[in-house]
Image (cartoon, rainbow over all chains, first blue to last red):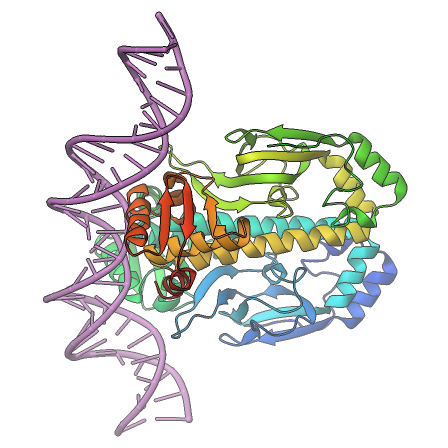
Length: 230
Length: 230
DNA sequence: CGCGGCTTTGATGTTCATCAAGTAAAGTGG
DNA sequence: CCACTTTACTTGATGAACATCAAAGCCGCG
């Protein structure tokens, strides 16, 4: 995967998204002090318990937001893509992270000193309002998603995230799963074995095709029905 | 229950909590336009789908935040007490509510025009920062709680919320449940029958005493053990 | 090449929802 | 205020959904 690291702030997707309300001076300060970092799939960006020093946003890639469990069984709270502001969750209510963030695809982050962001918030109400909107939206999404998944049966849960990957994340009926079967289980609250079992069922019923990590959805209508009813 | 409705802004619990950063003029505007409303147990304050016209905060009482389900089976997302800012959830990311809020004890709310609040945010960064902190904290709490409950077995869930009521909400080992058995089920994701069954088990094991809606915890250590392990 | 982690399938058991049925309590209308 | 209806509470019996256990093949990696 190719990333362009230099320059780029002026054409950054986030430019018009949240940084548009900044005055020239602050914007300069932001672009000159911000730091771009690349993480390979599997590398951890944020660890629970660690101090929050930067505000970070994902420019490209895919990450998982999760909490560590006891016996190597984590709980994945959300999959984050660019513009999801997955890094916002605890940033303003504590000094230390409550969650972990790990890249599940090669990812490109920008880091901005958290104090600069906080300063910009207290000095610029419009920017603050943008932040409020983003964090409100993010939280809402996570909560809705969580309850939405929890109320489904196992088949419905698998159908639900397959549709999510196809329509929301990859915009393609054929995609490569960025996470293992085990992680799917951690994301939708079921055992690895049952993830596999149900994927196999869907394959036997010709709803999907499976080639290792690559999934192709043949019958999305059927999948949607299962997601709705299951 | 007795509520004092008049005056009171200067001594309001929220005064120093979020409204301290306002200048005199804005504070006057706030106190002169704010509207106090009392809701009896069972009355609904906010309905999903309805337009958001006010920012509201609970001064006294207890409410439930929930989503409506199909066959009169709702999903309770959180129990809110004063200073929880339960009304903050969708307020800044949409124009219409995604949730319902209903009083589960007689409750006293203050309503402030949402546009005034938004104006105050864009004009006063420190106030905006306060809001950011509150919404961040609230979301975090809800998410953590949800996952914390979901990973437990039924006995552990019951133990968990009993402790929550005793320690967090009522600060007393003896309290009157503000919600029905059915609602407990909706809050922690189980059927009414199993709520009752497990409460009865706890009673038989002398962990709690039950007199209708009044619960008395006899053995909180045992309850904590069950909450942790179950 | 061997080790650990990932994937897969089958067999077994437990947890929990569902169904049923009855009592108690609380609201409703004449 | 009392019959009536609805809602809340309770217990037991049954079955389904799901986790756990077991075993084996696979793959990547040091």
